[in-house]
Amino acid sequence: QVQLQESGPDLVEPSQTLSLTCTVSGVSIRTNVYYYSWIRQAPGKGLEWMGAIDTTGYTYYSPSLKNRASISRDTLKNQFTLQLTSVTPEDTAVYYCSRDQNYGSNWVTGRRGSWGRGIQVTVSS
Image (cartoon, rainbow, N blue to C red; front, side):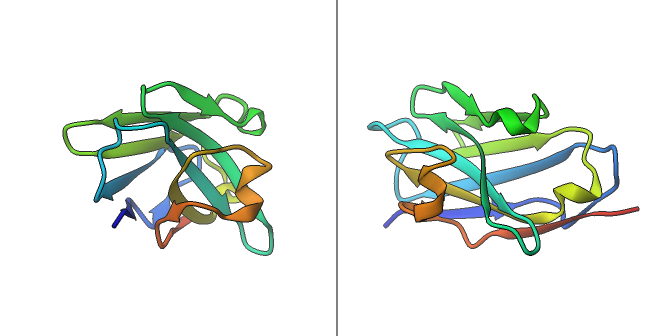
């Protein structure tokens, strides 16, 4: 059974870098053709796909983040990480990681694949 779990800080100060980790169990992040995505949902808003890393290590990003996001992976720990720079209060959201055979802004609305429970992150001084 595939499981994903997000971890990281629950409070980040404005202008700092947010770093979140997704630990995957039950499957290797290097096998088959899958995309490991980061998604967030701000208060009162819909799901926003942020970016993904595939099983070869290639990365994909939403243009809306204007190059603030970076996704990497640690295959030995079976984890992938999101870094979001220059955060503002508008980055306050529940952040999710997921695994599916698809990705992107259209894909996220169907909430397909395996998802973590999410982690609440607040940006505030």
